[in-house]
Image (cartoon, rainbow, N blue to C red):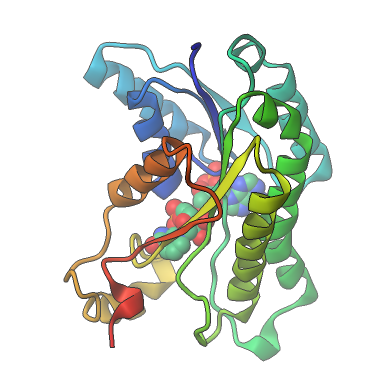
Length: 248
Ligand SMILES: NC(=O)c1ccc[n+]([C@@H]2O[C@H](COP(=O)([O-])OP(=O)(O)OC[C@H]3O[C@@H](n4cnc5c(N)ncnc54)[C@H](OP(=O)(O)O)[C@@H]3O)[C@@H](O)[C@H]2O)c1
């Protein structure tokens, strides 16, 4: 078997970067997609080489996923890339790119609502659809990065949680539509890395986590790797939340 190939959206920093590092260490060729975090992604690759003594087999690809033209260029680039052509297709596609901000329901503009739906639903839909041939050729696995908001009322996050709910359902639907060639799963992180605006709320959440701590980015990356490596798992949602979702 040749080298396995993955595309991870939004992987210049934070959780996406940890997933990229994990897959590099497992021997994958990784497309690190970024919008603005090019320097961070380059640093990740430089550090990987410094620590392992081996150059990372990777390429940083830049695209604002809110732009139809840039999304199309990203897709065309991956489809034509020698790593995909020479290794039997695309083995992993991780829909990680995300936006996350809090806003009163009454203040959410149509543009904000559309942007959340664009990044969390439309882009994963279109990327999976346009990359279906190399995904099928490689018996690949698609992973949607969702969250633990299912069935709960999160103040000021209706625009975010509703779009992540749609991503969750899209992934579960595709687990049926794309079988048996392609597996589709979700990873639902709990409290892993706070956004800048939510430090106070984050601390109060961590107090309720049965395992007594926030998650590490590696906890999430290891779960993504586990799903990519599990040929009989499809249609699954793994909550990486230290037991938060079952806490009383
Ligand atoms: N952090 C947590 O504790 C947590 C909790 C629950 C769920 N999650 C989920 O886990 C995943 C990773 O979380 P995270 O906190 O690491 O994510 P994040 O930092 O909020 O976002 C990841 C990346 O998305 C990219 N992105 C945003 N808008 C984009 C656009 N228009 N075009 C292209 N890329 C865009 C950004 O890339 P650039 O930096 O290159 O601009 C950003 O670095 C997300 O799907 C998130 O919803 C995270």
